[in-house]
Amino acid sequence: MNALLDLAARQLRADLAAAPARTRERFSPEGRAARCRTIAELRALAKRSVPKPIFDYADGAAWDEVTARRNLAAFEDVTLHPKALTDVSAVDLRTTILGGEVALPIIAAPTGLTGLQHPDGEVAIARAAHRAGTITTVSTMASCTLEEVAEASAGRRWFQLYVMSDRGLVDELLARATDNGYEALVLTVDVQVAGVRERDVRNGFSVPPRISLRTLAQGVAHPRWSAGFVANPRMVPANLGWEGSASATLAASVNKAFDPTVTWDDLADLRSRWKGPVIVKGVMRADDAQRCVEHGADALVVSNHGGRQLDGAAASIEALPAIADAVGDRAELYLDSGIRRGTDIVKALALGARAVMIGRALMYGIGAAGEAGARRAFGILDAELRVALALAGYPRAADLGMDAVSVR
Ligand SMILES: Cc1cc2nc3c(=O)[nH]c(=O)nc-3n(C[C@H](O)[C@H](O)[C@H](O)COP(=O)(O)O)c2cc1C
Ligand SMILES: CCCCC(=O)C(=O)O
Image 1: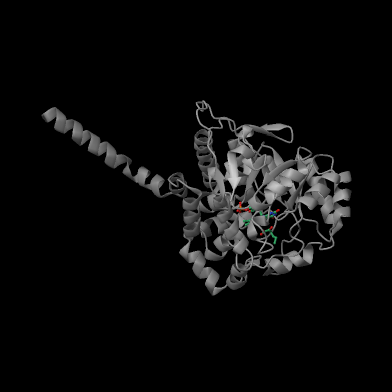
Image 2 (image 1 turned 90 degrees about the vertical axis):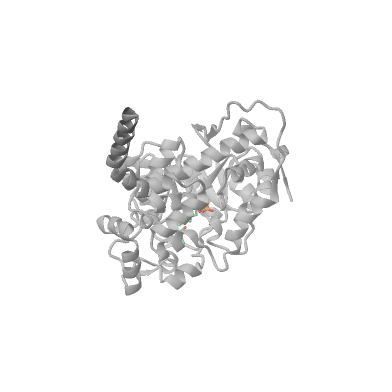
């Protein structure tokens, strides 16, 4: 009996000694992110972790946000037809993207001003993508420089271009992307002008951020975020020479810098100048997809920019089947806008995408816990996708086809 009491006392003492470290770990951003079981839970954690205008910039969309909601809802109109009695003991998520193998059919979408969510920004996302065995896409509007990301991660990298009116700047960006090992050029074609994101307008979201009583109060309410921001303020896009520029709304800055005259001739010009693969992002129509292929595009991203540009546009999953039909095997197809679950990925692959891109899932991840949160986002989707594929009866993600789904 005494020996038993002695053992219990020793165990209690050990537990108490370890408690501070366990508590710290439990309430750290990393610990909290590790306990998120879904992308929705990561979103909720990000919402608590960063100032409201910063969360709203990532989470928000254009005008009434109809397309953003539709991006999610339209996945519910795609139903799965599971195949019975297949051996699913080994689920294989691998596929090839532009000739190189990736461990899972998920690519990090380009996101601008990522460093507002967490100072490690695109570096955190690139490292998490590399660890997951996949590709990261660095935006023209990135908070980290192309060089910083290249140095921080040895994984595959693509560069996403917005064509600026200053074509000298475009040439410089392309040269830097080439010099730093960015293998493909992703030309985004759905930001002819800035979409109107009313949450940003209401919040006075501006670049560089304007410090007001309201933003100070937000900073005080989010001390961990503020400490990171003060230590490493990522105020403006890092690759465009905007440092020291006057504060303006993001829309005003975009409309000043981006070139709205961009047409098919510019795609032809970029195609002839960029030596690696060219991917056109923001294609929503079969006729445009066909034309991209005729212009030598190697791949397309079927995307409505997460509903952040033209509100009222179709969900990208709704646009995919006709585009897949028009393109056939002449170009690779990826899909983004609304991916929150492994089953969304199954549906996109079945309807003709080779991979999906994820934007907000990673923004929530880094807002919640920097690189650890981005890793969690990949981890959640990877795990969900494995179970979904097993239950759908397709142990190889790459084997999914139209027979696995129907669209209501
Ligand atoms: C905060 C944020 C910033 C973005 N910035 C860019 C960008 O700079 N370039 C780009 O091509 N797309 C950008 N996008 C769009 C994403 O690449 C992607 O199309 C979209 O996020 C997909 O929808 P999802 O967020 O539902 O995954 C951005 C999206 C978000 C949420
Ligand atoms: C308006 C374009 C700026 C970056 C971006 O693409 C986004 O916030 O969605």
